[in-house]
Length: 300
Image (cartoon, rainbow, N blue to C red; front, side, top):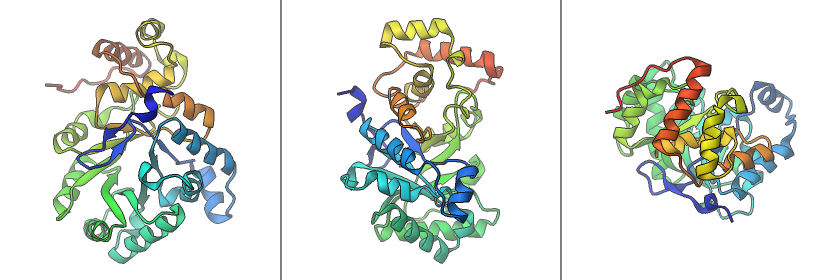
């Protein structure tokens, strides 16, 4: 049995215990459009198997969205499993932020996911209409009262938009935000990440492999690969890049996509060990050579 099988960490300031890494179920618009319009879900079974492989590897955080058309795949993958062992996250799009519409969206997601509660319900993108966001937040708090959702999250909100959302929450805290974040895309470290750290808000990092740019062996310097192998056993470049989140931040959860069972099993090998601060620094330097220097932020 791998170490990572039972590794659990607290999700933000909630009662939930989740794996330090999750999986995402966004399969791009070439998949979403035929799924939505024609009901054609290419490679459906392989994706269901990939989600099952994640769970078998010790991952219990699964992220979806009404936009992705993948909620029924998640339902199929978790069928028959003890519900309390899975942490289900999904999202509602801005089109459905009005009070009644958001509640209907939640009901639809519950049916699609085959469950009677969602662990983390997230606003997928900020609406340009602030009153819409306020209304949506009010509806979310009502859904928490009803036991239909446990925690409230947002996605793709800037720091200013996040602060506003927090100010509109009256009864429950903001538990998480979801952002594009990886070694290749670190701009949230300047403002949003420190704010989340101070306020006990978890970050779900999507595109954690930088759209695949960081998955190849060339992304990680060979000297570092050898050093990590001597210290932690044989690891792939992908595992090292994903482990960066867990070694550096206890409140950031990478959610690489679950579409290939073999990739998912490899990704899971990023859990259960930690790089030293020196190794983290070496890794960041080796990535800088590919992507250009990152403007350092004040880490005091």
